[in-house]
Image (cartoon, rainbow, N blue to C red; front, side, top):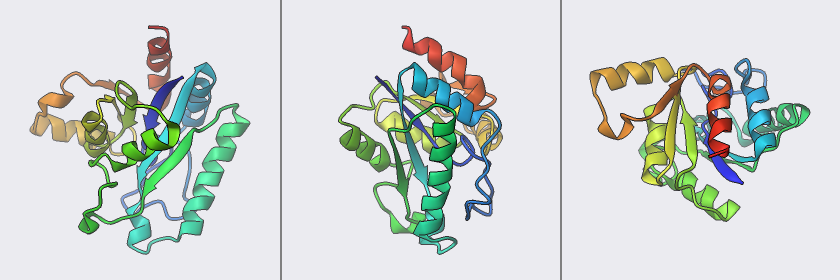
Amino acid sequence: MALLILDRDGVINQDSDDYIKSVEEWQPIPGSIAAMARLSQAGYRIAIATNQSGLGRGYFQPADLEAMHAKMTALLHEAGGELAGIFFCPHTPDDNCDCRKPKAGLIDAIEQALGCSAENAYIVGDSLRDLKAGLVKGCKPLLVKTGKGQRSLKKLAEQPQPELNHMQVFDSLADSCDFLLAQLKK
């Protein structure tokens, strides 16, 4: 099975500059759950890699995060899909940890937990730090325009980053689905 790594906020669910702090605030982006189900059913092992510094900042508690992830998992199960795992960094940028993207610690954890390499896996994100974490591990970056995606494109236009020159860009996770499904057949 092919590995697919997804960021959470801004890719799967609506994002907020004020953080997603509760299960009520966690709302899927239209089409994202159905896309994940299709990708799972087709043979992708889907792992979530998400920075959740709201924990370290005290904006929400571990139980709140667990409830958000339970909601996401339940919606995905209802749509016929599965997750291979959810991996999160609870630290703030000042903690200088190894797991906060753009560092690759979350992807290291995914590889270890799933017993596979992330090299050549697709990583889907809405921020450059998501994609850079994947590049460190040899992943293929896909940027979505949802969440912070438009800001990321603007940042790239202002400060080109050659390592991201060949990344695919899609309007949303749902819009990337057919492309990702076609990659399984190669």
